[in-house]
Length: 178
Ligand code: ATP
Ligand code: MG
Image (cartoon, rainbow, N blue to C red; front, side, top):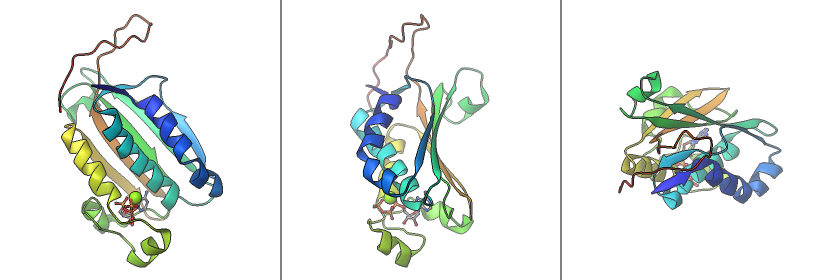
């Protein structure tokens, strides 16, 4: 099936508006109006719901969370990741960042960088394990970049759904089952 990530993002942001407002966070959307990817809407909504929730939760008060989307068509550099036309969606926060040595373990179930602080903030440490699982199921890739004291970038690469080039934004799809 096909999911329009732009539409999914709108739903997710609406659902997080209480947290976003109470931390005075600005959401910046750097993406096209329609972003068709191959995948299940409910599952992919869960992915970006978890990543955006983390960005707001671990981002500093009054900062910006950026959602950036890039398409990689045939012949482009980014195609290397999935070996087919793909879309990369990055969730970029301005928070504490994550020390390098923790990054490989972040997607383990119940793994948390700072147990005491995480307990204070609430949650179970399952969010990223679920993200990783769903992304893998879609034959996607998750990358994590972070700089301590600056913030983190979580990027999900997903297979692009073909879109006909007739300006009509009509989505022309080949069904793929996951
Ligand atoms: P849950 O998602 O289950 O409510 P959680 O947010 O603690 O709880 P994960 O989303 O799996 O769990 O994240 C695991 C850990 O990774 C977090 O506890 C936190 O230490 C760290 N982490 C995740 N996202 C970020 C981020 N954007 N900035 C800094 N640390 C992060
Ligand atoms: Mg989380």
